[in-house]
Length: 154
Image (spheres, rainbow, N blue to C red):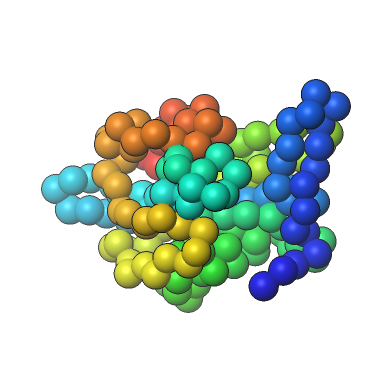
């Protein structure tokens, strides 16, 4: 479903960002028993911007949405996450471009890893122990934000 936020924003240097009103993603965490805390990651489809990397389910914000609303909606659309079981903890702008475009990471939790269903934007969805996230080829912006986000999970 296309929203009014779908579209590119361009910085003066030519860098481009998806989401006319910014973008948001959901960092969903859960206890994985002896494996500690796990996070839900999305292996981005090859055809997508920065494809074949791992990051968060997320995408463009629509004009009427908060970052939290957008992140939760996108997690439902891209990963089939049941929005009724999510407890939102906090949100943080983890990237801001020269143009003013922002990406907000919304941190949320569920009591245990929930079932997921990938849409066409995902090559795979996986619950990953937080100490193994760095072993994956991460989306560049998520990779830069991950060390701080990981600390916030504790």
